[in-house]
Image 1 (spheres, rainbow, N blue to C red):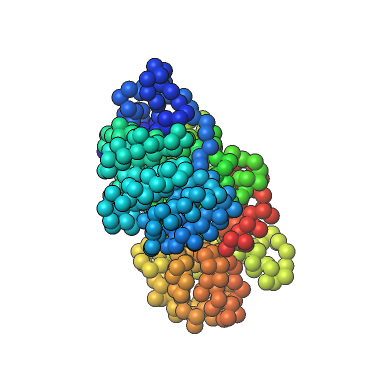
Image 2: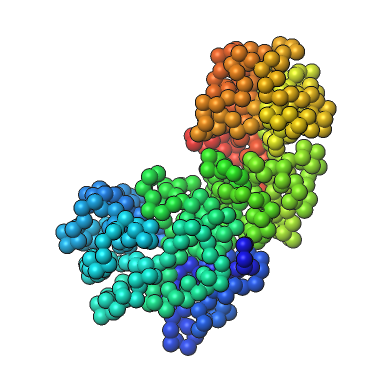
Length: 556
């Protein structure tokens, strides 16, 4: 964390209806129990001692934000939210293009199929409303009178709104007082003060949303916006969060970083996440393209493992691992650009991974929290290429690898490139490393006793026919699907072409290689095989191969 120790306890919401202080004179707080290293941060109101707060067992509510422009579409979306398993919806009145409170709220609130949270967010707090607060407050009061279960109002104007409803507030109504920071995540001291101010203003539920500049900002608060803050939304049930938001689809977000309700329920299995759930994740930059969460969560569910696998957009691996040091975070997959750095971050590295110089799997040993590094890339990729060659030749597995004696050209000198170079060398291939930066290519080539080229030299490299080509870079990966690391003309020298990129499944490189007469091996096969290896390291169980293959084919 930038300027404060990591907290063990994290306030998610203040609930006046569920817990009482020991002296019964005031209400206490809901907590999210983030079990990170470091002392307990001073996140408690002055009247509340941490030791007096029991663990909260309550279901995190799934809330779908409704941001349609018309009442009709909003009502249709409300019905869709119920059908998809939402617990409540947030009606964003500020998104309606022609809003008439008395006409529209009777329809939206009066005929609601689900409990509703009504929000009328002004421009100055990230919303769409540009009028005065008097009209806005009147609409929110009307929503409350019509039976809305929740209303959200901003801290800046909370005192005025609380005075307005003080004599009218129904018993079953809860006021959410919120604060949004679209630039950064404040320090723990600032957040502690903010929580106290919101509680003092009369909130039934405290909502604080900030923006994660770095993923190590996430432990500070309950809801963090943006891609780096996604885990704060996914892990709400583990740490006692009151609710989390899930949209009906891409483009229907009310704040940055909201996942879909379909993903929450069907990919992350959020209803099964609890206090004892172990957390695994993929660490990389970028990471949004990865299908690992789909694959690993399905595999975990199939064997009844109480675990969840989440995407972790990480800028600095050292800072990340220092921050997320709890044994609750049980293991990580490492992808671009962190595989090489991961070697130095582990307390112990498997000998093969050490020889490769790259780690794609990190296990946190439960007994002492030590990080152990492995590499499943080299087996996944090399076996996929070998089987691809054997399949094209119609032969079974033999003692001698089909790579033996072949010129094996690897594009890229990063973590995946190192894994393939090691594996190809072990199989008796003549390894050539081509890289945009020649010095990197030469360094790896010298390490494994191979030859080095620049990408420009690769275009005319043709010592023999029937060579094998393996792309280990991200060239051609979504969204840059029209890119390729080598020209179609140069592909005529290769009998086998492998691409580690699997999104899309058929990259431009593979399409042009197939058109040139080469046998092609998709990166999807490497992805499945290395993921099976990771699953077995994570769980000490045999990977459910058929399920993982079916899942990978369905989602790519």
